[in-house]
Each structure stands twice: as C-alpha cells, then as structure tokens.
Image (tube, rainbow, N blue to C red):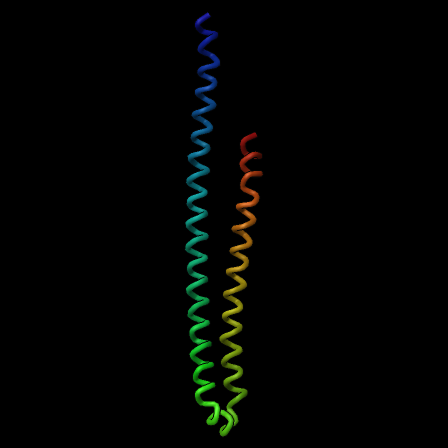
Length: 119
C-alpha cells in the first residue's frame, strides 16, 4: 500500500522538476532575446541620432550661407547631400520599425507559444 502512495508523489515530483527545467530554459532564452532586442534597439537609436545630427549640421550650414549658395547656384548639390543623409536616416528608421514590430509580435504570441509548448 505504501508503494501506491509513493507513485503519485514521484510522478508529481517528476512533473514539477520537468516544469522547472523548462521554465529555466525558457527564462534563459527570454533574457537572451530581450537583451539582444534592447541592444539592437539602442544601436539603431544611436545610428539614427548620428544621422539626424549630421543632417541638422548641414541644414544649419545651408541656412547660414544662403546668400553664397544662391550666388554660386549650389542649391542642387546641397539638396543632394541633404537627401542622401535623409535616405540613410529613413533606412535606419525602417530597420528600427521592423525590429519593434518583431518584438511586439513576439510578446503578443508568447502566451500562445507557452501554452502550445506546455501541452
């Protein structure tokens, strides 16, 4: 009779131990994913600020030297410089938006995936 009483307890202990191991692996993966997305987000934000800073410096130079630009007809060359910087800035913003969308999708799907993996 005592053997029968120990069987469920051993089964429960095995189940709890397996669940804790799964939770440990899932937590480790979650922290790894979170740290990667945080670093990547920070990296994109730094790149975006650098591009924005260079664009603002160029615009300041253009506005301060407007008379010289008009005198020598340099509008088109400076326009191309500004547009090139802006294209790079938009490229970085797109990467950041894709990263944010992926992160949000992952967070939204996480409860469903945990439930599927738990079954």
